[in-house]
Length: 325
Image (tube, rainbow, N blue to C red):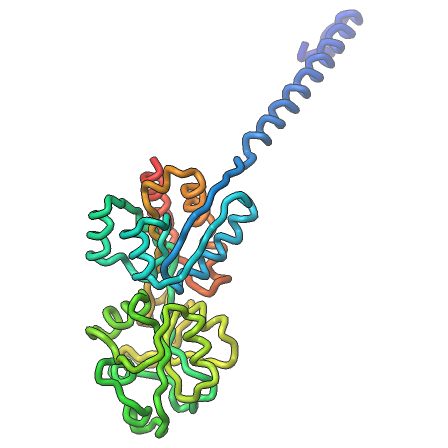
């Protein structure tokens, strides 16, 4: 039947042709059916429910951006996002247990792990990106204040902090230092104290907030101001603020995607979300966590942070899948 030209009998040829047409029609129907089934199988199942997230004001904008994208594919799932700082988020996550995901701009501390254990809460740590912690001042601050050494940062932020800029560096102007910075529940606060400066605690006479938006507002329009927060907030601050360079011993370096990636800027840090393992039994939580990792690389740059290495994201996906089971 596949070699109709060799068939010398017209009847046979006609019969074969009819048979071929019939088979072709059958195959078309079969193909159409398979195509329909394939389309149906790729449709995303509609989910409902709510997910409660709290924690870092640094990671907050990234999680918010992911939630906006997720709403486009799962409009029935409501993501409730709060910002109480990394430490405040872990209090809810480990103690009251009323959040399923916690945003964190630092790794979870041993004492927080113990609280989780005491309350029977197991979790999965997920690295989602990198931040270049950024020191900022008002655009109205004299331009001569543009780079600080580690010693000078301690003079501004440490327990024996100076009151005026010329006390930090004699070449700086006789101008009062006005500090707007994260409060004690912030992971950004912890990172600056413990990882960058190695101090027990900072000065106490400053304007503290766990909300980086409030810090940003204080910096703007205040000549002589100084503060620090996540790189994304600086990216979105506009021309009313400017970043200060940091000299960790090898010269002044500005915060940027490039200097964070090549490790010349020494105020970079990892960003995380923590997911409660028992919450992953809920389809909407598991689906959102997977969506987060699948889409973070395409979203994080727009928010203002830096992608985590591809192998790090791959490891996070494997850990998440293991926790889901």
